[in-house]
Structures are given as structure tokens and as C-alpha cells.
Amino acid sequence: MAETITITDNRTGESIEVPLVDGTVAAKAWSGLLPGVWFDDPSFSATSGADSAITYLDGGAGLLRYRGYPIEQLAQSTSFLEVAHLLVRGELPDGPQLKTWKSEIAEAAPIHENFHKRILEGFRDDAHAMGVLVSSIAAMSTFWPDSKNIEDPDQRRDEIVRLIAKMPTVAASAYRRSEGLPYVLPDPDLDYTSNFLTMMFKTGDSPYVVDPVLRDAMDMLFVLHADHEQNCSTTTARVVGSAHADPYVTVSAAASALYGPRHGGANEAVLRMLTEIGEYGNVDSFMEGVKAGEQKLMGFGHRVYKNYDPRARIVKDTAHRVFDVTGTNPLLDIALKLEEVALADPYFIDRKLYPNVDFYSGLIYQSMGFPVEMFTVLFTIGRTPGWLAHWDEMLTQNSRIARPRQRYTGPADRDVPAIDER
Ligand code: CMC
Image (tube, rainbow, N blue to C red):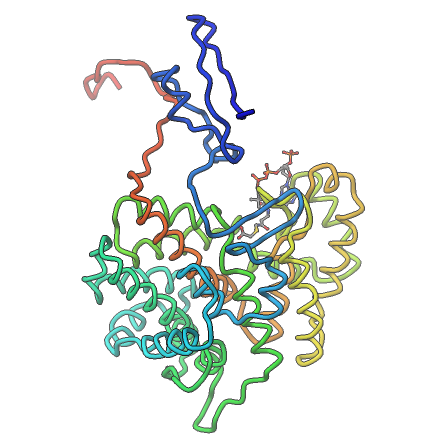
């Protein structure tokens, strides 16, 4: 029997039967019965904003899959570039496809010299790396005006390659600028993540030797961050893209959303929180403050996960492998204690608050030598293929411009008073 919902307008007695498809009912079908009545859902908690074949997320069960593949398997056995291909092209690459994909990305990695001189050099010395990155991505729109041909699939394909390829170059350059270090050009002979680490940390003329454990950890962290269905930044990308803005300003807008501490900025906020707690012995009083509503436990909670975030589990395991190389992070004990206290406390249990992907990732980044201002930049590199996959999917769906309605709560009609009567 077909699954349907019947809704009755008690003002008129009229009923309408609408199908329930994949757990959703089409708002358009309801509005046939209810013209001028809007669905009031300001944070989109109960709204499906897209039909998407990219990522499956079951927050209750703690499941995450990219195009059907479980995140645990992808993290274990695929590189970030393979996952990027999966997201933006629909399938994991075979051997020859991967070879072509890697060389396309490597060729597109350099950035224009003017970009270094005119754009990056224009920021204040103490500019936050995310502010620099967000503005730089938007500025890239002026370097590739053809990117505005968003209806041409070949053009979109080129821009997707460019954005994935250049993101680490811009990110590393933003860091080196803030440190007053000379820029390191991308090396086409290195894999994506080794290249990024080299552009970040190479000093002097001697070759920079990338530790394979740290490279693999970084690459896996990019995989874990690569997509997360209709989160705040991806929704931003789809909304901005629906206006047919070019991909650079679209991705810049998405990165701006990510910058917020409730979203990707949480990894930086977690590190600042752990540093502020300072000592193992301060955990209990800090947690009392959280329960009293004085502050949030950053890196905990999620709109969709009401179970342990599967990414957080993998990040936690990875932390131990990284610390075997770098030495342990002294803040780890505080983080472990916070988690232990939270998972046993009714405040967190009742609200189904568990560690999310941002809880342990900052500890790894810090141990690898990244300053806290770079943490959300790292998230941005990882999430770029996800944003672009959604942008491309949205454009191929022939979507309409995003334009919600509102519940007006302002004053009724009134006359403008003269200035001495205001
Ligand atoms: N610490 C303490 N209490 C919390 C937390 C937290 N981190 N998160 C939610 N709560 C409480 C919240 O106060 C509310 O309590 P009450 O019912 O008494 O009012 C209840 O739990 C439900 O929370 P909510 O505010 O309705 O949750 P939301 O879905 O609107 O917000 C969130 C989700 C991620 C913004 C929020 O959990 C949060 O601010 N967490 C900390 C920031 C963070 O770690 N963000 C990263 C998210 S995962 C990666 C990403 O998206 O980039």
C-alpha cells in the first residue's frame, strides 16, 4: 500500500492526501490546500532542502556514507583525492582515471604571482587565516571570469579541478604570509597532502621530508571532512549557487559559514577551551559551568547526530597514532576527562550530546605544528570537494533560486511621522 498523509483544513473541511516519499512530503503538495500558509522552520530542522545522491547520514544510528560507501572503509583504504573524485564525479576512480585526476589536480595547483603580491600581501600581518582564505577564494573569481558560465558542464568541471587543486596552495600561502615566510610553490611530483605539508612547513633550501604517518593522518582527516550532506556551509553553497553566482564566490560563501564556531570554527574553539581549562583538576568546575548554561562544551553536540559521530571515533584513534610520532599532546588528558564526564552525566545523556568531528581533530593539528588559526582552514580544504559536488548536483537538477518565505512579526501599516514627531 502506498504511504500517504492526509491533512484536513478544519477551517474549510477540505482534505488533501499527499504521498510520503523517502520520508518526505512535498511542501508544494501541501500548499495546494493551504495557499498563503508557510511552513515555519527557521533553522530548517524539519525541512529537506535538496534531493541529493551524494552523502547518506543517519544521525540516530551514527552512520555516514559517501555515495554508498561507509566512512570507515573510505578512511581506511582510500586517499583524499580518490574521495574527492568519488564526490565530484560520482565514482571512485580506477587506476588510469586516478592517474589522470592526480595530474589534472597537480597541474592546476599553482596560483598566479599577482595573487601572492596583490591579494595576499594586502592583508594585515595579524589577519586570521580564515579571513584571508575566505576573501582570497572570492578574489579568485576575478582571475577566472569564465567561471561565470555555470551552465556549461565542461566549464564547471574545470573550475571544480581548479578549486580543489588551489585550495591547499592558497591555504599554505595564507599561513606563510602571516609568519613572514617565503611562499613555497607546489611540487607536481608530490601527492596532494605531502605537497600541502611541504608548502606549509618547508624551510630553507634542503628538501622537506614528510613523515608518512603524519601525511596519512592528515589525508584521512581530509577524507573525514569531505562531505556531510546539507550542513550549514553546504546549504550556503546550494543557496548562493542557486542564484547562479560563480563557483569561487559560492565556495567563499560556504567557507564563511564554516568559519563560525558553531560549525567548522569549533575545532579552533575546542583548542582554546582546552587551553583555558588548563588542568585536569579544573574539568569538573568547567562542566558545572556548561550545565549552568555559562558556556558550551565545544566539540560536542550535533543537529543530526544523536549518537557518537562516527568521524569522531576515527579521529580519536588517529590521534594516538599521531602522538606516537609527535609525542603526546598535554591537552589530551583534559579532552579525555571531559568526554568521560560528559558521557556519564544526565545533562549530556538526556540531550544526546556526544563528541563530534571537531572534538579531537584540533589536538592532532596542534601536535603536527599547525597554529589554531589554521584549523578551520584545514577543514575548508577537506570540505571543498563536498561543496563543489553539491553545487554541481544542484545545477544539474535545474533547481529554482532558493527563496524562502517568512512569518512577518513587525509593525502593522503606519504613516511616516515628520522628523520632530519621531
Ligand atoms: N554544550 C552544552 N550544551 C549543549 C551543546 C554543547 N556543545 N550542544 C547543545 N547543547 C544543549 C543545548 O543548550 C540544548 O539544551 P536545552 O534543551 O536545555 O535548551 C540542547 O543541548 C539541544 O541543543 P540545540 O541547541 O537545540 O542543538 P542544535 O542542533 O541547534 O545545535 C550545535 C547544534 C552543533 C550548533 C550545538 O550542539 C553546538 O553549539 N555545539 C558546540 C559547537 C560545535 O562543536 N560545533 C561543531 C558541530 S560538528 C562539525 C560541524 O558542523 O562543523
